[in-house]
Image (tube, rainbow, N blue to C red; front, side, top):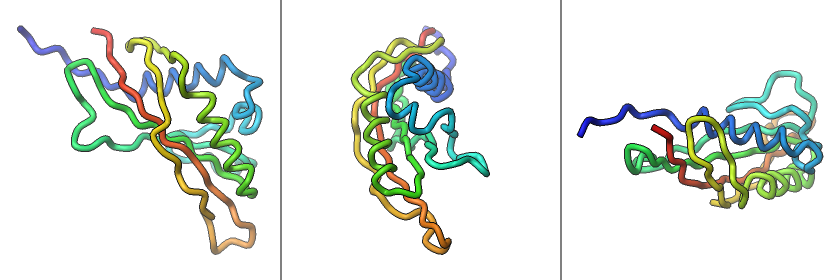
Length: 145
């Protein structure tokens, strides 16, 4: 049996999350951050609040089989209000969990709550404190061969 080439799962998972946002424009998370959702970093000059998506490395490996990967996406919200950051992080949890997500190259998958990211000030040295709060999600994603 020949080994199939590994396909990366992060790009289609990102596309699936973006499609979920696009399909739910009136959801409180989507309304709260508008179109300000960055990957790893927010864009300079974005007004608050905004959100940042990243992935946590899964240890010891994220690849369970040739087609099955564990993913841990994180959504972190930045806001001058700690309460707003927490509310929008909770809204992100509500938006992205418990529903089928899909994108080309992967089978439909469902994310679940993995854990909260503590609410903390992000920039203690500035005159205006910016707060961050977030959630880590977890799921298994199967690639299509």
